[in-house]
Image 1 (cartoon, rainbow, N blue to C red):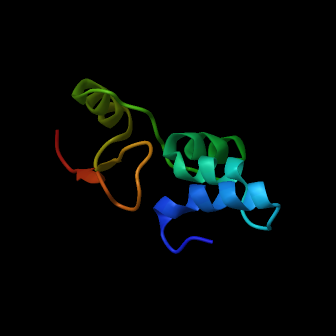
Image 2 (cartoon, rainbow, N blue to C red):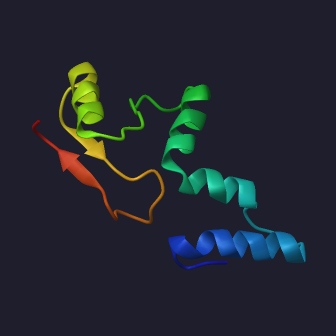
Length: 90
């Protein structure tokens, strides 16, 4: 068990190695990867949120042109709200 997000993956690995109950490594990996999680939810029809991976300011502008403002920009893999920004104008 982990009391913080960064400890989830090590805890899952230990659980699997020792045969203990808990979330699987595959489940934790999915939950920690925001892009994979968005795609997974979209395939299940449970996520109405538009999303895309952007690597440049142009990518963000194109996403805004297609979906409007505001948009939330965040790293694919990070803990909590680290590196999360709300873009209200381009």
